[in-house]
Every structure is written in structure tokens, then in C-alpha cells.
Length: 220
Image 1 (cartoon, one colour):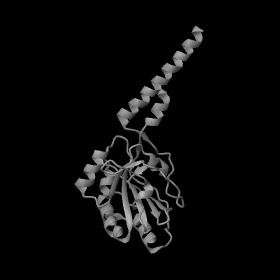
Image 2 (spheres, one colour; image 1 turned 60 degrees about the vertical axis):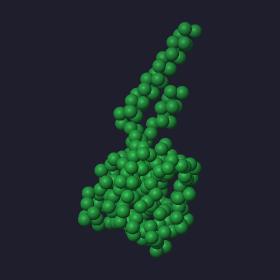
Image 3 (cartoon, helix red, strand yellow; image 1 turned 90 degrees about the vertical axis):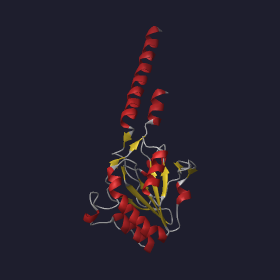
Image 4 (tube, one colour; image 1 turned 45 degrees about the vertical axis):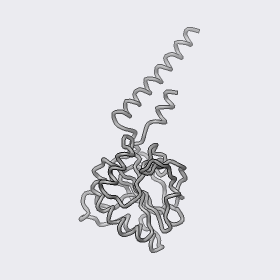
């Protein structure tokens, strides 16, 4: 009937309007924040997310292909976050101390609006001695429950999460650090001990997730 057709037309128009609003949010804000999301709990195994990550040459790699014999740090990073910039020297010092002890550092960029080219440029200009990757659809970040940049996830030799959270307790200044959470966790991993305080609040820029799946479902 004409009434049913009119109702269907209104529903379709409403869906398209919602879709356009969401698309506008993507263009203006770059993605959805995830402040309510909970990070993966210590004791959980490394999630399998096949082909989700991109190397700087554009090739795909899975998290399991990146693990090292002693342990692996996945550090969620950004090309345009001042909190990340404040931690660069501290991160480089940790890399220097622990990569020689068979701990691998993997820097992952999952932010909507940032690109593989930007990640490559950052790694080259800052001379990062780590593996830098792009998580273009934020599938790996979603699997881990990442909420901030920087946000550290440490997995031991058994690929079990043993630490998640901040690098330390002083984002503003390395001179004021009282609790070096990530360093203490890495030392415990190297020593074969238990990580105390395995979960700490992450400080930093809110991670922006892409809206792609939400928009596609609304416009379908």
C-alpha cells in the first residue's frame, strides 16, 4: 500500500541520515573514542588476528609471527600525540636495555586518520630501533582492548599477557618517575619471575577507532 511504501521510505531516509552523521563524525573527528573499553586481562593468551598488521613495506604479518623467545612488548603508538612524544626517549632507553636480552619491541599504530606513510616517516626520522607496524582496521587494537597511546602490552615466552598499562607513573617528566611499571615488568620477565602490579592505568591520547564497520552496517 502507499502507506507501507511511505513508511519504508521514511525508514530508509532515517538510516541514510544516521549514516551521513556518522560519516561526518569520521571526517571531522577521525574515528570513535573507546574510553569505556576494557583492556585484555593479564593471564590471557596473545589473540590470533591473522594478517591484521602491516609492515612498513606494506606486507601483512600476524602478532604470533612477531614474538621473540624471551618476551614481546606491543606498544601502541601515534604519529601525532604529545604524550607519545614525551615518552620517546624513555622508550628508546628501554629498547636499548632489553632487546639485547631477547625482548622484542613492536610499535603499533591503530589510530583512525593516521597512515602507513606517516608511521614509516616517524620511524625513519626518529631512528626507531624497533619493529613499527600499522593496524589499519584496528583489529589488533580491538582484540587487546587498547584505549590510549602510549599503551603497553607485555607477553612472556608462553605468549601470555603479563603486563598491561602505562610505561611509568610520570607522563610529564622522566625525572619524577617513582614507579617504572614497564621496566619492572620486563625485568621480571627476563628474570623468570612474577610481574607485580600487572595491570596499571594507561595515560595518554585516546585511541581513535575507525567507524568503517558501523557506517557500512547503517548504510546497508
